[in-house]
Length: 113
Image (cartoon, rainbow, N blue to C red):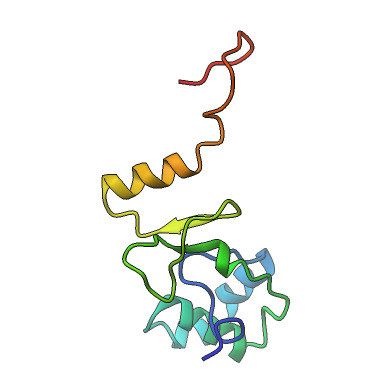
């Protein structure tokens, strides 16, 4: 199944207000509520002929690199979200990777602790 056409990325998606109103008023979502939420939501969009203009940021939201999976890769700077940070070591590694203030010189104009 093509993830760019048939379902929404389960790690997070944003929809416009017109889609929210359509979900509220349509019978399609009310009759199809079981299954993985990303696939079910994709079914709603396809069956209701909605959500034709999509922006895919799938590769910017991914699972932590360990353990390796089809949804994981090394940490990269254009990341939106990292999924499955289930222990302190993974959080520390991720926060250190994205610490863009570590090289700032001390200043009276700001405080970073």
